[in-house]
Length: 289
Image (cartoon, rainbow, N blue to C red; front, side, top):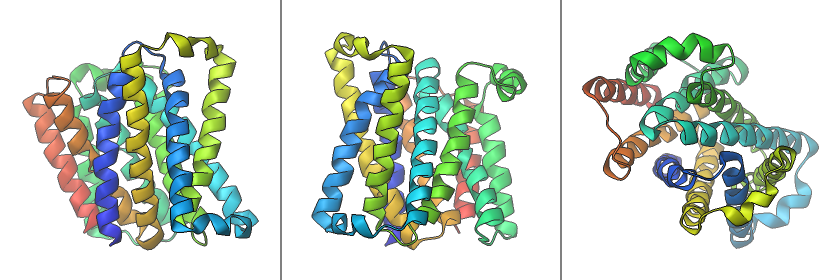
């Protein structure tokens, strides 16, 4: 059953990228992140009420709470980077780089959680990395050293998103060991909400809420609904399944993102990028086997 939840997470995560891209055409990405987070928060806590897990809130131990809060901070950082990258770059270019979090997560899971990584897993990591590089354009590859050094536009933000997403998975896995997955998701979302609006306040963009176009507001809020669905599926899968398998399956959302970026956003994807996508997917499947 956890594999089904992981696939559901991939579907909704892929939709999130496309919906969010539509919402940040003119709206500041940090403000958009803050606007969509309450939608996720309401949905997450509603699920805890329906499942009854909200009654266990008082029983969450200090260790689990600390890891969940830390996971929430990592998620907030990942979101801020991801939506900034989406605002600056194409979905079909941002999504593959963001999925490099798969490689980072599995390495961390092996080193920190003791999860097994056999020969097939190593092959998968290599294929995911090669596939991602193939999906980048020549100018992206030339900008890679600069992006790693702290600059480079959308690429730097996409890389930052991948790093923080990997931390989210590892911290979340530890935090929900003794906590219902939907309750853990709700707690983490509260942290993201505070962090996102804090960033808006620091940047002095609160006054910009009234200037968000109605059409973009709809897309932003809808992306929040998709994220909520993805999170609930993801952490339910993490609770029962190994992170080294759940994370790669979830990252197949890149297929959904690229497909919709071409069909809906009319982005152009060349032969090299399609080959890279195929290699990336093959690596992901190898990791999940």
